[in-house]
Length: 75
Image (cartoon, rainbow, N blue to C red; front, side):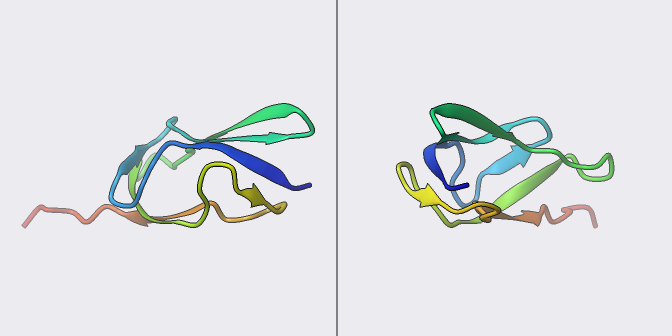
């Protein structure tokens, strides 16, 4: 079922942590909160690309944004 983006909380380059709210969507007059869920090995990631903006209609199973691992700075 299609939904409408009410809010995207991040932009490319931002860091998302486990439990952060990524986006809020509405469908059939109901609000759906999309939350980050990461495994214990890596609890944060960087936003690489955002595919939609506020007020965009998105199809079922759409990819809203792409994440990438945060590069380790340890030498």
